[in-house]
Length: 197
Image 1 (cartoon, rainbow, N blue to C red):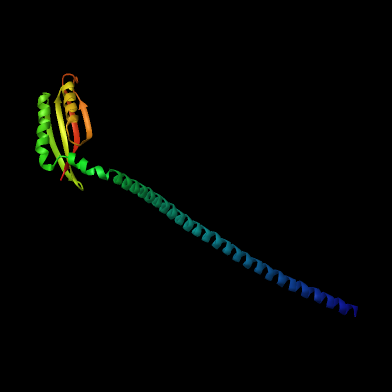
Image 2 (image 1 turned 90 degrees about the vertical axis):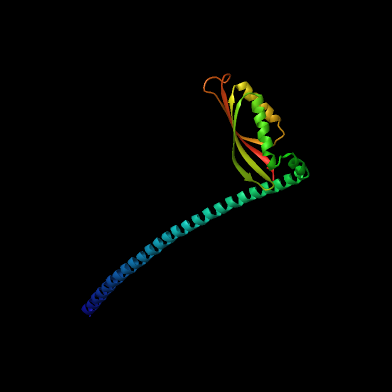
């Protein structure tokens, strides 16, 4: 009987050992499968987070650009409001300002007065009308004036021109000489002359 029990015990141990080996192999397979699944989930999570980080970065750039545009529009709107307020302040004086502007048909008179000033100061003058630009209620005549003579005479011309009753904006002014300003000088001026339509 003892032998039977011993054999039975050995069979039981062998069976348990066999089951344990089966369980151990099955356990290793389950761990391997679960590990692979976890690695895949982690990889997908990391990949999708990079994708969404890129999307978030793109959207934040769009928001920054939109904010910049809004700020520009706000500044432009503030300037517009300021211009409107300034316009309302000067509106009562506009008729007086326009009354000082020469009319288009008075261009010949203006050119003649410039030629008189040049002759009076004994300097050579070349006038060139470059373009007429229409504005809302005005016209802007762009002139290039080139004067040749000595410095003092050119300065006298400029002083007399400054006293003329015309609204002129000097766009560019160049005074130069090849030798000495006292002997020979040239003045090149680009002006805008404003006229009534």
